[in-house]
Image (cartoon, rainbow, N blue to C red):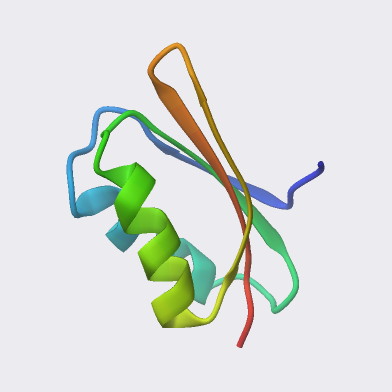
Length: 76
């Protein structure tokens, strides 16, 4: 899947990955997709909850070799 913007949150601990995603998504147009990379294990829980609370669509979530990858479509 393609994305419009990328956010590298590798090395950041909770709650920074979600806070940076929120800030980036605020500047993006509705319907665009953010690809976020993180390595904080808490992101597996935090990012889906953030998407539900903020009304964004979590399109994909993947874990490979300790790196987490999320595709988030901005809504509203």
